Image (tube, rainbow, N blue to C red; front, side, top):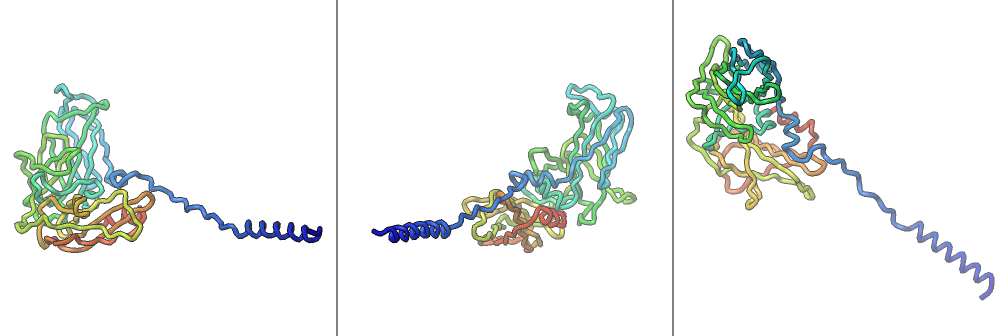
Length: 311
């Protein structure tokens, strides 16, 4: 082989190598996905639920506190005792949560359902807690409470008092507690003897009910939710109920007695690692043969908050 031929061959090899390198497929990195700042929907809801309001109670005198939503509670002198039954002196730290709106009920996971699975209509839900020097204290005598009557309540004169606990979102009637109405202040009034979750409620008057109502989220291809919740929000009464997920039917179903024909808004909230989803559907309660499909759309946290606050 001549020297010129060798030179030509070397040039060809170098050119081919450069061509191979130049034509090598460019590697495009996967887009960076920012995870949501909460691990599940419960954690998100906790950030949106009404916060506890703090008050300082002087124990040796009668004192009335007023919440941001107008709830008034009067404590009488020497009302508090410690775990051994001793009268608490000095200051007591008192916390009040007020929940009137259906959106706040959803954020707080406080459904208007009784422990016997009957639907309730709420005039207001409240959490009451008291401590002294960081230790829980209890009541030595009744407090007096005034709850503003909301126009969202259809039958104020039917109101009763119900109680619950921190770990149970259903409600049980309070024994022998009469709820009166003061027409001058337009408020419910009652005395009660425990610091716990309480709710001004009455049972739904519907006689034609069903547990055969179910819904399912309709998702775009490729969307895999890591957490999802479903609710029924009643349009004309101050009531809300959650639906449970049945893995056998891949749908959210009802374990409560819901009034047939009552107009509702179905609300489904879901999330994956980086995106929130919301689906809403206006419909009426009826026994269905297959789950109602609720289209899920991506939303921002601000959009979700606005939608739920406006329920």
